[in-house]
Each structure stands twice: as structure tokens, then as C-alpha cells.
Image (cartoon, rainbow, N blue to C red; front, top):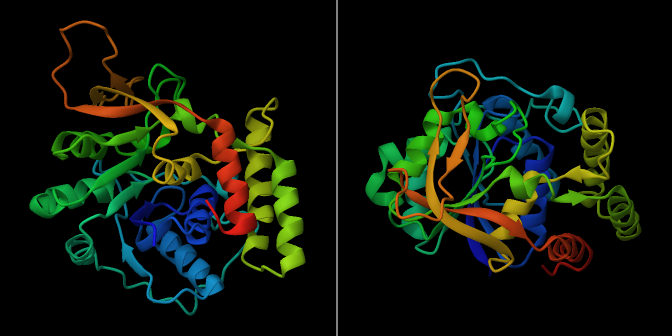
Length: 319
């Protein structure tokens, strides 16, 4: 089996596609899923995960209820224009069969204790991950690696001119994670994810193959992608496809040599104002640096290897 992953997500469209990629990829073994607020509410995220699990008929995949709101205390803001009212684009899943009692966060301990080579992949707000560091500091030291989608380093933000959505949604949590982690975290920022564009002709080609094979789960991708792409096209008319932010983070955990990182001190702005949620990396080539923990910030990636892995995974089951 592949790298064992505990996946934290807020389960809008790109989270779901990232999870599907992981489930199709033999180099990834998803051990559990932590469903958080973010693109949708916590309850809707749990429902969307269960909807996907039911569609894939995968058994024994642990689902854990994550955070319902940020450490800021602010009411979360959801994004139905990008992800659809339910978080799945045009799909409107029934939730009558789902148990919403997911106050089982403690189960994270059992998963980490059981798998010493476990990798955490966090593609949503960092509230649950921060909570794990606060509640289980010794257990979290046993995690092999952590990948986080977040931040925009000397790069335009996507919710403010300087801030990316995950860090802006809970900058207190982001700062806690970056401060409390005893090993450097691999941060995949907008600098990379905004360029992780999958063009529509590739989705059309995959959808044709899914239909030829009778793969009903694979056929879910195109309707979600089309909704997502249309939303991005409205915001950025020149864009040539949909940037699958969360997918590239999952891929980074497999093709570990295909991301170029720079280790620098990182801090997140928590003061209210125009810079709220901004990610700051000290990239100066000087001895004097800001007094913040150092982490690996993704600076560049192999775009065509990313696209090839995406296509090959869904076409052949090889990533």
C-alpha cells in the first residue's frame, strides 16, 4: 500500500476531487477523513464525505467530525457561488441516511498511534489541526509529515489582496499550527495551487473513458468540475481551466520530489485590518530573520508531471 494519509478537508468540489484522486491512487491509502467547516458547514462537509463513501462503496473509512467554526469566534463564511449550495456543484445529496453525531475528534489519537508513518494532509481551514496540536501535543509529535494548503507568499490573495482563504478563515489556528509543530510543515500556497489548472478538454477526455468503463463514481467529476470552472471563468475570464488547489496538495504528498520548497520563518497576521490573514515568509538572504518558526514553503512545481499524474491515476489506476 501507499503513504497512509489522514485527510482534513472542508469538502467542496476541489476537496472531493482530491479525495477521489487519493482513492484511485495506489500510492495513497486514506486512513481517515476529518470533515470541517469552510467551503460548507461542518454538517454539510460530513454529509458530502458520507455521500462519496456511499457512492464508492468503500468500507471501514473512518470519518471524524472536525471544527464547526474558527478560533476567531467569527461566523464562518461559505462559498456557494464557487462550490454550489451543497458543496458538490450541481449535486444535491440526500442526507436522511447519515448520522450527524460526529463528536468523535478523539479518534484522531487512535489513528496516529496506530500508524507511525502517517501523513496529515490539510486542505481547508486549520482549526481542527490546531485543536489537535493543543489537545494532543505528544501524540502529534508522532506524525511523520504534514502538508498544508494555505497562504500566499509575495503573491495576490484570493479573499483579500494579500490573504488566501484557508489562512484568512482562521489565522489564529494557522499561527498555532505553525508555532506548535515540532517539525517543519510543508506549505503549498496559492503561488502553486492557483497554477494547478486542469483544462476542460482533459476532464472531457476522462469523462468519456469513465462512461466507456461504466465508472459511475468517475462520472461525478465532470459535472462538479464544470460548475467549478464556470465560477472561476466568471471571476477570471482569461483562465484556461479550473485550478484544483486541494488536488495538488494531495499529489505533493505522493510525488514528493516535484515541489520546490524554501525553508523560511513564517508568520500569519492576526491583527484586524487589511492585512488580516496575510502569510509572511522571511525570504531575505540575510542572517537577521523574523523570530518565527521555519517551515517549507512551496515555490514552484512540475506542472506537467502533476497533470500527467492526475490523468494516469484516473485512467489506469497508476499515479
